[in-house]
Length: 288
Image (cartoon, rainbow, N blue to C red; front, side):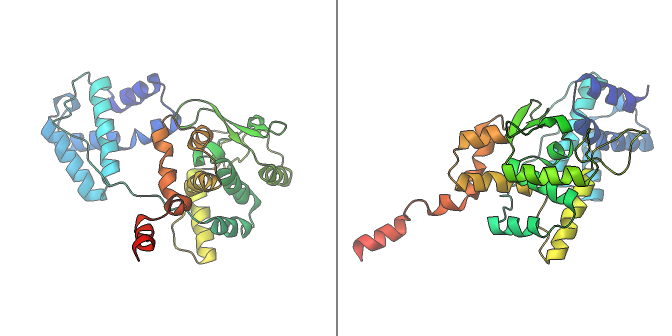
């Protein structure tokens, strides 16, 4: 039995996205290699064997707690759907981890970052992420037909939450997109195709392309390496909230399923900190 092929087949049968298929295959292959070296068949592996693998993986690769949880999820999927064995969460519990507030640049910093980009393709990608609150994968996979000029909106097909939504298309973002489209060969399939093809087929630019271009531009500006592609989505929502938009509107534009995911922007927005009088200042004014 080819366990890895069976695992990938079950992932596909579950209807998981391509991104999930790739990410869910990373550590199972390492797990199967680990068992092969120790001479243990996967169906005979004990809870102790799995715990040893996780600890070994954490030591060798210095994995964060979030990543360890992803490894545990993959082991759980493999055991249930490939080996048809039970899963005991008390044997391998998920890790608890600290939650940190994401970095959000000021509006003038976003302006400086965008206005100093010379590469029109990279510039347009950043503009769309910031002006529409798109995820990196969403903007990279945009197609020509997803842009509605007359209605001023962007069709986001099967985003992270597995359902379609519409994002806002600002007038100035549309102007930039139009300039890019004419300058870069009028792409009719993916709006931002990669220069390389896969099996002879056109593919969108990669996440690695985005990350490297952002890092290069930070270096050009002499900035610390704080910005990621997702930073511009956070900045869009935070600045929108600071400009007076309500959370339900922001939730809809971002494609969040739960309002709990959107409330983080209350904490990130500057206006939240200074919107109401500080009780200490009010007390001192009253009794001084």
